[in-house]
Structure formats: C-alpha cells, structure tokens
Length: 140
Image 1 (tube, rainbow, N blue to C red):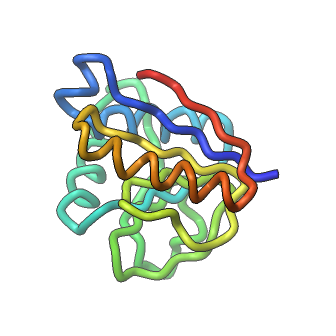
Image 2: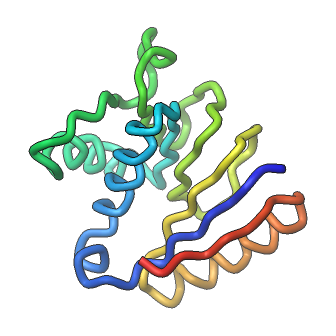
C-alpha cells in the first residue's frame, strides 16, 4: 500500500524558510539510499531549492540536479519544476497544489504554516485517502 506523510510546518526555523524542511527530508532520503523526486511549484522554487541543497548543511553532500538532463536517472535527488517530464521514483516530495500523477511508494507533503496552504493540504489528504494511501501527519 502506498503511503503519504504530511509534514506540517510549525517550528520557527521552518516557518522562516520552509525549503529547509525539504532539504532535511532529502538528506534523510539520500542517507537511506532512496532515489527521490521533488516536485516544485514553479521554476523559481526549483532554483532556490537547488541552491539551498548545496549550502544548508556543511557536512552533507546530497547529489541533486534540476530535471531535464540526460543523466537524470543517475542522480539521487531530482528537482522537477512544472512542465518538465521525469520518470517516477519510489519517493516523492510534493510541493505542488495537487496530488501528483504517477506511481510512488511514498509521498511526502510539506505543508506551510499559512492557513490557506493548509486548506489545500486537506484536499490532497482526502484525495490520497480516496486513492487508498496509508496516511500520516507530523508537526514539524
């Protein structure tokens, strides 16, 4: 059964810079040798995440890149902005407003502290539930 985990941003560190939580999740996935896709909301967010993954932790080297190159299948963490196609991977971090199409063993939803963002996450929660996902929620 596929699984969806919702990470609700609560700590000041993540409220100020929500992409830090995404970096932490990518770091954990890489340490667990789980090839990961990160679906971003737009190209600006994809570029910001790309930069942050290089600098957020001096002790961590997470192989990653923006999707669209011939070697996309070889990189541990692939950042995918809208309009760019990529192959499914077992683990997906979703930053978009909708549930992703495709087959994933596990989806991580990062939900901002903003009440409007939480409304969208409730819609995605119900959609994952309808699709038969096992659901979990974590306050971060």
